[in-house]
Image 1 (cartoon, rainbow, N blue to C red):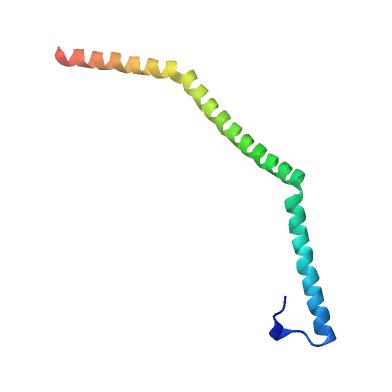
Image 2 (image 1 turned 90 degrees about the vertical axis):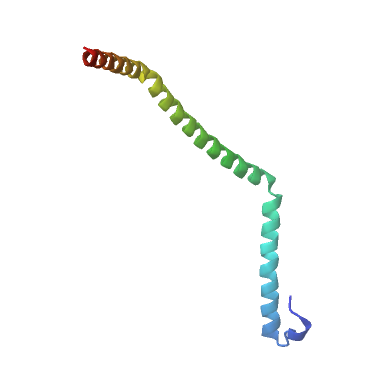
Length: 97
């Protein structure tokens, strides 16, 4: 709104002030309508939650695959450790004799 000091005096100024006020009122109505549209807000929130759930599922799936890889390769690691222990024992025996 205009202050009393800048009151429009001519018809074009008054018309311009009316248009400005209409525009502001229209924006306010749009904002209120968006806030009142609970269904659309719920849909938007559900979409956000769905996206977060999909991201989390992908992350957990990746972790599970990595974990499965470790479970599949542990016999190889144990065999390698055993061979290393045998080799170390043979070297130690050679050094003692």
